[in-house]
Length: 597
Image (tube, rainbow, N blue to C red; front, side, top):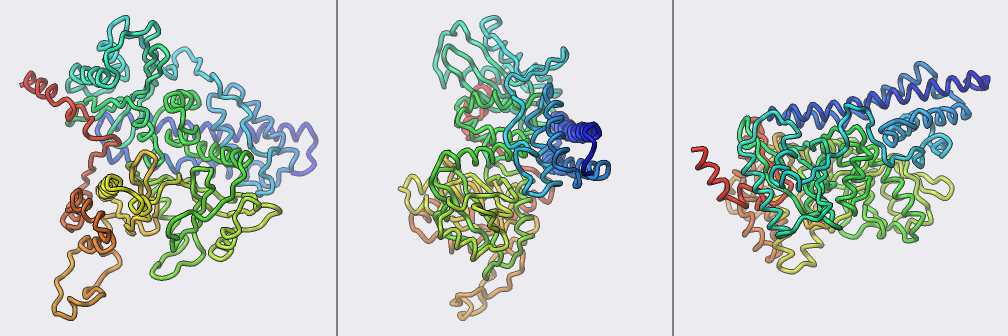
């Protein structure tokens, strides 16, 4: 398609741009339909279908990109479109986005399609959106029947209790509430317990995002209270108490609690957004320290999150001077892990070869990471950003890191001028390795770390995840003090494992043997043996036996496996169970039960 007449070239540029936007619009329509369906499945209490919906939505974006690439190749022979036409395509696309309600996501979709068609040498300002071209400030849905991004409520008019009840009922959930009056009183009591008595300021108001946030077995009402100069965030969790009945489970009033439910270790929310940038701006106002990249990702727009993260990385590199170094801690057998000290993330490459006892392949490891991406992470497994062809300035790489890359993963790197291009890399939030946390911690740190470690693994096996390699070095401690798993090369479904007890030795020779005297199949697990590598430190042993003595009992693991095989899904709470209303205010629930009787 080289050397088109200008008029024909311009028409083709517009047609391709229109086709690209149609591809994005189809993606976002499917994205929103999933969120709408999530509300119905939540109302029905169909947790298996809701989990399946969340998994399917993760793969939907790549499917829509592939569809668009095929259409462009079939209709326009896209690979052979010349440079001038590609520049016109981008300009026409920008024009089509001037009144669009998701322009930033549409630009990312454009990049995804172009990167599938064009060679990496063309990834520059002329052909893709390195910087956003359309502002997302003050975008709103102006259609008369459309719901606004958030609703404003004024408690001075009807009173706080009536306002809170209206906030909940405005979402029009189909199942009735077990006792909404009781639950609203619990919310008000929590507000008083947290903030004390306060006289409403003249501007006292409550803003609530217009869509519910669905994940696991819960729906969340997300909002903020404006009171004088204060902006107070909140999230109200709605759950089923029994089939066909709902209840407010708790209210989260501390910013750190919201940061945890929106953290990188949780699965993405299903939420219906006409204007996603407006939701991100709202959430940024109540979590100002959280990067927009992470907010977009938590909302299920992980490709937009990736795009923003990469822009943040480039910006940080321009305004910093430290070097990428090998990450502190024990080196792994499967991954090279490096970090930039001034940037709170780690970069992980799969090595070209793995020494014994590792018996795996690059493809198998990539499948494990994909499994985690699609699985419910429960706040216990780190999300990863997966990139291809990441170019880093050679001058910013420590010499020992370069030698490590050349030695362990030569197939994954190439030199291109003054840059090192990494063909495939995973990027995760940096955490303190649990082994270092325990090694350097005091008695309270050890007690907390071990309780969190045991809780993390118990929750993972309830969700059908067997971590495989449970050495402390494979877990990290987040800035909120939660223990999170981040090494996935040996991960398995618990239902694929054979939980076994160690058979007694048949003679003295077997009893004294340093090697197993029993056969071990590829999927056999022996919980009784885990103490060998977990309880070496007496301080750790004491804390472990205090909090998790049942950890080494095969019956615990087998029980969870059987529950999973029977289709049972456990309840998980991304907040402390002690703040659940039924636990925090038991007398209110006792009174409600007495009235019902």
